[in-house]
Length: 281
Ligand SMILES: CC(C)(COP(=O)(O)OP(=O)(O)OC[C@H]1O[C@@H](n2cnc3c(N)ncnc32)[C@H](O)[C@@H]1OP(=O)(O)O)[C@@H](O)C(=O)NCCC(=O)NCCS
Image (cartoon, rainbow, N blue to C red):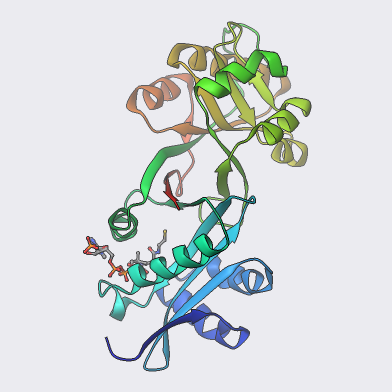
């Protein structure tokens, strides 16, 4: 392709980026997010131009010292399938490697074949698939569960490490990072980690969401299948007693999804499912 330029975005590109986003999706969250991303001192904001016309954009930002989050990838429809996304991804990886990040992650809708194919062809892998489901309070028989202390959960998190996540201005409203001891200990301190009665499964609640709304949002779960199921039942019983909702970013496995349906969880539509992808640098 002649005269293709990939460079760091400037504030003079913002309107063109927003036009591109609107062209792809009438209600693209990236339209509002892009000016904020441009204010982010440590962000990588890339644009591609062909013969001077802005045809693509991409954003990434650090979540921790080692982990970056990628989102807002848009290629003009007339230029899709011509290798532009792949070239931008090469550039993004180069920038982030140069800044000593160890991993980049992002989330993709399972039906976005173009995006999944692109990242796979660049040696990204699928970390996990998530189905966001909601259960309104209802009575259930379950053994009691409660907030865990570090001793009760550290061995579970070590055996079944899971990603940490936080609310984020993103398509699926969360971003994911490697959960090291310190943030996990902080969550334990905030009584946001619950453990099954037999100490074989633990679940992490979004403590900020709990303070804001009163509802519980399980954003990570770890352990063997049966203990995890009894933990979820215990959480349902606790939310029933408090009259609050239980939101669950659950693993997409059929067995889990079937069990959650039986328990009364409904998928949260329209953005119920997503795939977390990652690239170790
Ligand atoms: C996803 C997107 C960024 C890909 O960019 P692109 O420039 O079209 O991708 P490329 O031309 O570099 O193609 C990369 C790979 O994906 C494949 N691919 C691209 N479009 C495809 C499609 N519609 N169906 C199947 N495969 C596709 C290419 O064949 C190529 O695979 P290969 O390397 O094995 O040959 C672009 O399609 C887009 O902007 N889509 C709309 C917005 C969007 O979905 N953003 C991502 C949100 S997570």
